[in-house]
Image 1 (tube, one colour):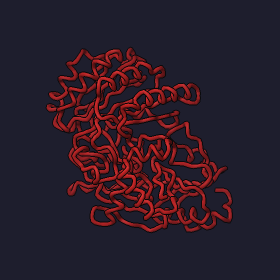
Image 2 (cartoon, one colour):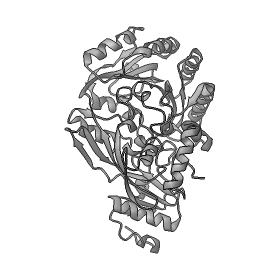
Image 3 (cartoon, one colour):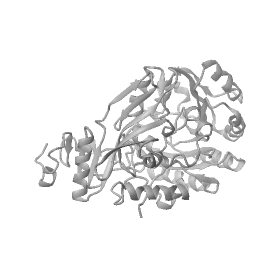
Image 4 (cartoon, helix red, strand yellow):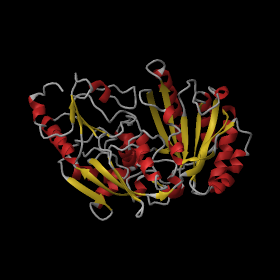
Length: 459
């Protein structure tokens, strides 16, 4: 490493790696998942433990620069990095400890979803956590955590038992139902506004290792009829079934026969978290709606389902997202959804519609900071290109799609927000929850040190 400056000498008790502009590893380590985000931190502090985090935060308070915190680096708008200032990189914190008897797991802040699944599935256990394995566990959980097990077992935050957290002042605290309960309420949906979570404790559930899951595809022209059938189909499906409807072009993946690559399709991707034979029975009416173009819904390892989207959303591509929740799939919503699918004119652009309800809706609205437990579906419009070429065009498709759906919006999933301003953040939580979060922010971070997030202003 190059000679450190007098300011960085103040970090002499730091035991991890300090990387600055010009160092050999800098350009690689400053990258985040979204390739359209190109920022240059003044210092990357790769933390190996709580002491390193406290040291780096003390340095940030003295220097006054911005502080970014990165677990997996999947923040859609790029909040997990910054220009200038200090980036606390938690990727080295990879510890996972599974207790198969108590059915719990402790995981540090640098753990990725696939890494947690690998350890828990060794015992036939899992906790609800996302749909792309290289997503960071920390950011996903703190915003809520939707995924293939959510209707049966709830959100990631609904299975969170406790956290260890470093505050803006460098104090290490534990938060759970019986200790610092106000903080525990806030971090379950309030994101990284209140400190840096260093370790999570989750409840685990019996899952797999084989589940009945996968995509069923029809030509996109059948989207209006399929969505109307799907609307009725999901009204009384068991909680074991979680589904998402996806409009996209079939990707060129080795798991899909080449003759289907590039076809425009509407897809129902399903996961049945129960006995295989029950999953076959429950999904049979959907498969009988009309002859599928391609049916890949079958028994498969749960870890394979979790990795299904990995190749479609790799690091380095350029992404732009806008999201919204709707109460239900009315005829108007379905017409808009179908039209926006047919308007997709790029091979990497897509959008899922996640079916909510089930265990999510049975948690009281005020039990956690997560907003929208009573909502029916979450839309996430995703414009994607390999690089700069064509990005603005796909971004316009996203914006047009979001505006078309705007009259029917009832909120948003905070993890799917882009940089949309404080009013949008407030509406995502609702006024009552936002005011409560603001009070909590004044208690734990009155100076708003942690503002590179979907920020709850203390003022």
